[in-house]
Image (cartoon, rainbow, N blue to C red; front, side):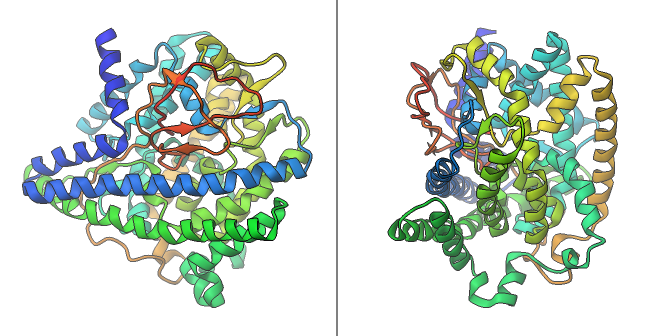
Length: 519
């Protein structure tokens, strides 16, 4: 067990910018790609992950302080401290059984691929923390380790099936062949599915409303850079910034919005030759069988619709935090709602109007999820000793990932009759979603005008990314949950690396250090 734990921690410490390119290099060589091209593709992929992480963190560092300033302006004072995904991931990785979930993911994926139950090969190993946390949640409700492993295994299976159903949409949205995103955040599409389908009956929601269509309608105002600047300056004024502060935020937001699509092209440059080689390899040795490489969600970060939505939802979340009865979470570190927007982007086909409306409707779900699971997170922090919790204070996550799945399955396995019914309904909607997404027109064809040039190769195998850098989290010293200076992935971005979470209004994270990794 100690050897396994050491190996897992070593792999995690490599970070996605190293580990994923290494996997890609090996896959490329096995597929017959020349050594020089394999090296270049792997290095370019590492550069793409590192670049996307830098820009995501840059965006977070710019927006999070504005969100905190707005919460002060609204006079919000709530007792559950929002640690965001980096804080929850940090605590989760210190759990004693964490290392067991790394082989669990590999075994389930291998069995499902062998029996043709999935086409997704998931190499996003950093986000295994999500499965660990689900295990902890179920253990909290049921007091049974076996139940915890069962639900975590169900989650892994559903993530792989999610990778299967969203593959063609992801390829169409990004232009990257043979890749998919088997991430836990995509499962929130189950909640969005009926809402999104209702929008089909409202004509305005059936018109093109991606960034490209928006730019055609409103000209320069729809340009990525200009949109970023407008949203940034409005957010700055809303946070009470001075004119100079608001203008600085405008330039920072414009910078990020300009760089996202540029960096996304590096993913395409890296993945295309490997995907072509893997496609030929599968055609030759496995009768043309398709396999998709499961990467972390940041491969979608080049879509400006994603960032416009999450920035617009910042003040929305703060208003809801202020007016929702019984909410106890003060949005802070998790205020960029990556737990929602990835599923929204995929299920709507990058329809910005639908995404914003879905965000307005479902934001309370995350705040109440953070409130409901605050005792679980607080208890985990106390049990592991990763974070010192002051008397009368709770730890939480304002954009809590998968609140529906974890509440329903956790309570169902604890024997609650209402939760058992909820799980059955949830699974039925997942089946509906699966069949729906495999038959719907591609995003570029759904609303009448092209969204993005789709990739030409459809029978390819592409590598999966995982987010954050090494996250054994033996030491969380100095983590700043406000200005996240992390090189780690995300719930979402695929953040990797160190998550600066240093200062949380008196919260003492004493003596724990961490190479952050993400959700």
